[in-house]
Amino acid sequence: MQLPIEIEVNDPVKRLRKVVRSLEDVPLKRVKLYAYGTKFEDDRRTCDYELQDISSVDVHIKPLKFMVMVLLWKANLKVAVKVKQLDKVKPSLKFDLPLEGYFFICKQSGMDEDKSFKWHGIEMGDTIEVFKGTISR
Image (tube, rainbow, N blue to C red):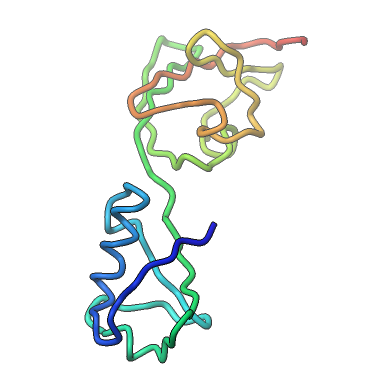
C-alpha cells in the first residue's frame, strides 16, 4: 500500500512517524521508518536521509504484543502468556503438552496450531484452553 504524504525537507522524523501513526491508527512506538536500508531516528530530520521529491519510505509497524490466558488441562491452572498477533499458536504456548495428543480451544472454536493468533481473532485477555486428545475434521 502506498500513502502519499507531504512533508517539508527539514521536518523532524518524529513528525513523519506521527503522520503515519494517525493514518494507520497505531501507537507511535510501533511505527518504524526506513529508506535505502537505513532506519530513521527521531532526533534527525528528513533531509538527513537525502529524501527527494517523490521519495519512498518503508513503514514497518511492529506487531502488537498482548496477554492471553492459557487454561491447562491439568490442575485447572490458568497461566498468563505474552504473545504477538502474528505468532503461531503452538510455538508461543510452550507448555508440557500431552504426548498422546492435545488441542487448543478459544471462543468455542478449535484452533489450528500452525495459524497465528490474529488469524484466530484472539484478543487481549482471551482464554485459550488446552485439552488432552485430538480433533478430527
